[in-house]
Image 1 (cartoon, rainbow, N blue to C red):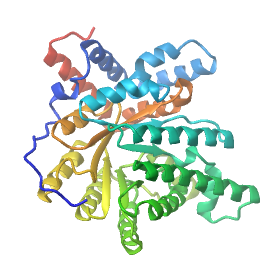
Image 2 (image 1 turned 135 degrees about the horizontal axis):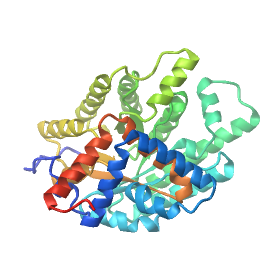
Image 3 (image 1 turned 45 degrees about the vertical axis):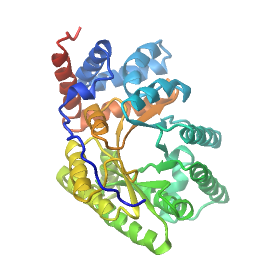
Length: 400
């Protein structure tokens, strides 16, 4: 698709809470306020996480409380059909949905097959829905991590492990093939560095098959790693040589603490940038690179960073790339950074929300990570809390 001349567009004001929270009633806004007020207290996050885990292990009746608080904030429901209300509400604001089956089940073949089947259903759903622009999966959801790690290490595999890895490749291919058949874009999520190289290999194998006419398969690039920006540039060169398009989802990264602990314990170089500024620099450089090569790269910015979002919007305007050019998307998680999502969508940009779903018990690991992420990312909970507080003040309503 060629670049099209950019029309006059509305400026983006991330401080406009009237847009960010327009879809929330006063009652919903109060609930959001109190949730982020609690998540803004690190000690309370730690305490709450401990007691929720304990309550679930003891089978205490806490699911209703979870459902009406953290689950409601960050998840669309327990099934695809449960997510219909969220999909519709987002669509009315010009925001797409990325259905993310966030179940972290047991590490066995039956679970891998079940997860594969569910992701196929998300692809089929996206194929008939104009407001579901992407689907997504993690390779560790459809195959054993220990086998992926041995493949990356080029260790000798047993016959069972060889067969297990071939099943992983077959599942990845079935997902990407279905996506290609329906013209549905599909993200392959990034994971830890000790299995990322083999994930990359699978992603590029799928791109070589299915990205001949447009970007259907997207690999995910974690820019908090030293080597990721050069890897993106090399991937582009390889794709040009072999005649396929690159799909690139750009993120900063989600496994920093785990990566650093493992690097220390195993005495190898920490793969993560030493400073956030270095990560930001690489992220913005990756955006620049993708926009410079927009004829051959489709990009999605998976970011909650306001400056990176604005920076990309400015560069798009400078390069005469229309805000609604389908090769450029912005994505945030449901329940977070609504000031970015809703204001960019109002200004005419392509925006989608990750909408996790699955049975409450099974998605709790995801929810615990969201709580910890809000606590660990500098200012994340405070920013969300202050935005909601500002909107409550603007509406002139009480917090109780």
